[in-house]
Image 1 (cartoon, helix red, strand yellow):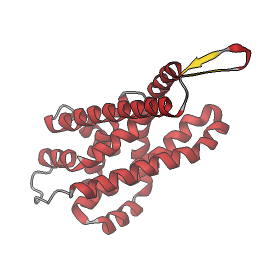
Image 2 (cartoon, one colour; image 1 turned 135 degrees about the vertical axis):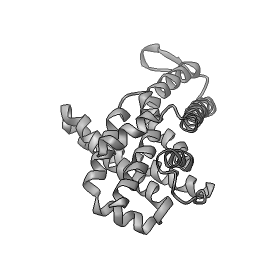
Image 3 (cartoon, one colour; image 1 turned 90 degrees about the vertical axis):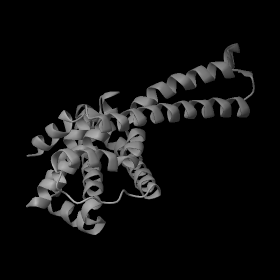
Length: 227
């Protein structure tokens, strides 16, 4: 049944409403990453001298450091793309869930959209949770060696499942009932989260994961609630 939820979400990726959210998320993610690079470059230029000499007479300029910062931001962006894109998709969760419900559950009563500031607060809280959890898990990653990807999938599968299911459910039944429903089906929700976390570890592909997650857990909520 979980794979059925996922496949329904996957086949709807061409939906114009999905596409609008995807391109907004990609565009805003790239803008934010570029802004971060500019901020780091300006900070380096303000804090450091134009150049300084290292032992053995090696001279390093701020321009050289800026190039290094740019390369570093490109490398870091592969890891930051998913959590940053998740923030923007969280803001537009109602659009994704609404598109799913209009196509697959057309007889549901209409509901009001979540206020923008509430959606933004939820998205930023999820971003903080993802960053903190993965920073703490870094210690485990270092000792896990070849098993590090499995630890990554397990940790982020739990985060994705917990957050996306509760967000999808809370739209219809409120946060308290959403948490109760999530607690009753935590194993199934965690497994679905892992299914999302596996493509999340692939650069660029991970930009699609937040939309797939929002759609998949919308299907899962309706299926579990129907029981």
